[in-house]
Image (cartoon, rainbow, N blue to C red):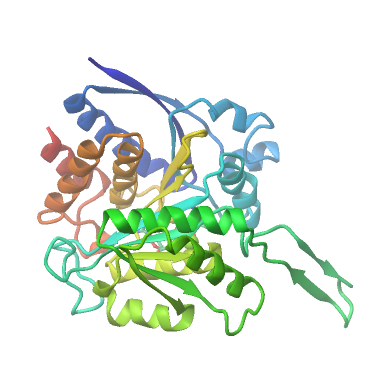
Length: 355
Ligand code: NAI
Ligand code: MG
């Protein structure tokens, strides 16, 4: 029996367009082994489109991808279009309209990839680096509330409000604790309740309430500054890290760097209820400095495709993608990893291991 799945593809800008074909090739290859066929609908939503039409996506854009099983995105952003335009014109509307309130970012050190930290051992060895950042993805510090006042005057000022809701904090905490209970039963919640005196104590309170339902999980709160330092000094001590939108954004790039390259790091924007499609994308951006040269590392996009498979209920297929990445990295490395392989060669090395 074969199952067919419809995927909305949004390559976006720059290397986003170069790393999605490798990801779909891997989906097709692993799908053949698991009775899955993928149908792709591609959308040209991007800064390039913005330059021609004045909008990142059409007015009915979200309705066009609402019925898909999942969304696979490359990267958006390009010089000439302010980053807040590309972000708020495409990514954030998708994340919010589709209640993708979890931003999931697994981090591991792979054998063959040199971490800048000499003590960081591969994630598949005892005491190696293997953690997941669970970032709140729908509210918090990234809000539209606030404004600029007295523009151009001496008294000019800007106000930006952070919004934390009991529902928003509660559901992300539930997701993170549940994930920890299926991993190594350890969780750290990022806070800053000493400096940010309203929202962060509230965050801590709601997390503590939710933790009560997961007695098996050992957890603690830690201030974001100390946590950031510890993530560098002792990354293997972490399993699940729960964080607000801003803290999670910063920590996940930091952790990806600890793992050796941002070119490998994947992410999922999940609606755990399954009501809306979830979206999978590499952590990196459009990399204008290397775009068009065929040298982008496709592994961030390929691992994102692996997360997509896991999310849609095919964990074995997802694990095969990760195993193929692990094995390919022993032999082939792209420039960001100190090697000489291009996008095609890296992709071929992964595909060879799946077939
Ligand atoms: P970036 O991630 O595009 O690039 C940072 C550095 O990492 C560059 O030197 C780049 O060459 C390198 N790099 C990134 N991905 C790589 C890969 N797969 N293989 C090899 N090297 C890789 O971040 P940057 O330069 O800050 O942003 C460029 C544009 O991308 C901006 O317009 C930004 O807004 C956008 N962006 C979009 C994101 C998204 O779509 N979710 C996320 C981050 C940035
Ligand atoms: Mg980021």
